[in-house]
Length: 435
Image 1 (cartoon, rainbow, N blue to C red):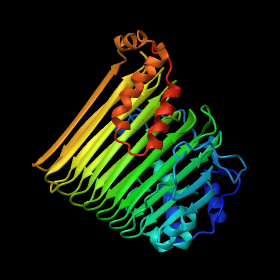
Image 2: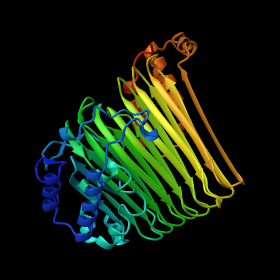
Image 3: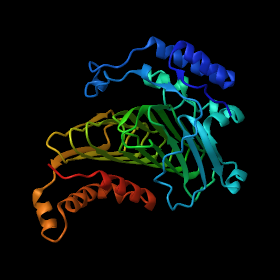
């Protein structure tokens, strides 16, 4: 297992030191070098660009962060795996792999699960043709290039044709206060395969700082089924940037659940490509913000073939002076007839100073489709609070019930009990009195 040296800077010399510490295959080194050239020749996005006009990163300074070597700090406590009978786990801390396990019975069937860095060496041909080639573009912007050049840990899941994994797998990425994490998740499900992956990231405390620059690639063959849960609970001093994409094959289905609770600022591009006829996806997003947090999610549901279905539902509750930005797009290609696409964003303002920007969009080139979108924003109804308090609940309990009820539509879609409970408890702990 290769490791980064202690405190590797994101500079030309730091990049060369990083490569020297890795001892990787030539193909991966070449991929990293090409990405670093893109980064070095690129520029940081500004608010003059449409995608970034509502997200200000002028206070972000990369030179404040570096890749740290292995440390002895304990992992934060996972939330999603409590009480769950797991088929395997893969944990890392500050970009360094910590633990990896897989049920031997699954290994005998050809399932691969563990450190992406390790499998890039032991199964190079399989990883090479899928890593940053089909889904996430390492040259899309400066963040994707930096990630491709410096990712040091990650999760790799490969499920062979027709193999069904009955119990969930769990991945966890921890980051120390002030640390950096460039975690990469690569999931490959062959035709007819099924799996559930619970993935979470967290800091040791709610006020911890740091830098996260990640990527997620979910690749589904024909008639494959994936349930993927991604819970982000970084400390509120963390700058987080990520590119995420799923490619869904013919008659395949993905249920993708997102819980975004932490970070100082998050900018996430989430893309689902329905790449085969009859493909379907359901994306469920839960965002809860407080203080001066800023969460920005740009989603794209791309219908490339006919008879595909997409359903995106994002709900956000905002406290204090926090802000969310959701910009969603349904794109339907010319041949994607009989498309059924839906997107919705609902926002609950728990403060007069919070702000939620919701920008749904449609780009349709086919003429036999059903595509709809909706968005709502509103405050807590004081009559509901009065109704609950008149029946013995405290004002705080009443507000918590109202917020939980607001998210219930998303919770009802989640079939994994531990995920429902983890999200519900995490949100309830954050709710304060309504202004």
